[in-house]
Image (cartoon, rainbow, N blue to C red; front, side, top):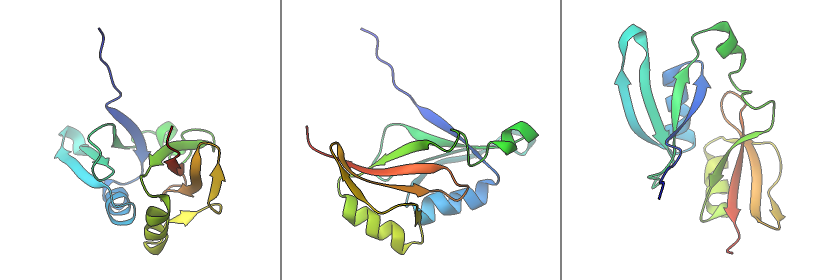
Amino acid sequence: MVKQKIGYVALLVRDYDETLAFYTGVLGFDLLEDTMLDGGKRWVRVAPPGDAGTCLLLAKATTPEQAARIGDQTGERVFLFLHTDDFWRDYHALRARGLQFTEEPRAESYGTVAVFVDLYGNRWDLLELKAP
């Protein structure tokens, strides 16, 4: 039986330190790794607290083509989905830390959701799924 999983999702960023400040300070993510590499690059991984699964690999843009895609890696669609076990707890905590939501929370058939943007404008869903 084949066992696979997505390990990292690369997220294009302008600056490692400003991005780390946002993801650890505003979103409350854990810094998993920050390793210096050759050529001034860094291997920087962050993940939501308590998440041992997929994490974000912060990838500093190094070409004009990459820089042009910072904040819009998916053509203005929601890019990432931050699942939570308590929507209202996290919604209020994130707003208190200055996170910008682009809409009011709403109840959908699949759960409670609201869209927010990260420091570069990437769109995320904060989502508490309904129990199956």
